[in-house]
Image (cartoon, rainbow, N blue to C red; front, side, top):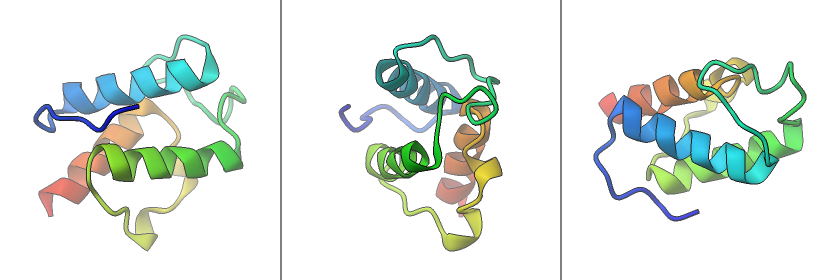
Length: 87
């Protein structure tokens, strides 16, 4: 997946993450789907998500944000990116 070149709006972040997840899981992913509860994302895949987020949005996720709830849904990951970029 290429890094994003569009402005970091919640819609652009959500679209990027949804596209990435759908391509990797081969399943439709909605913005509020609990990725861990459904089994679509394992702890190993969570590391891939972290790598994707940091590369696609040119951010570094701080250690205090490295928790399951930050990566549970597309919406929580979108909020994470927006928090990081607003600092």
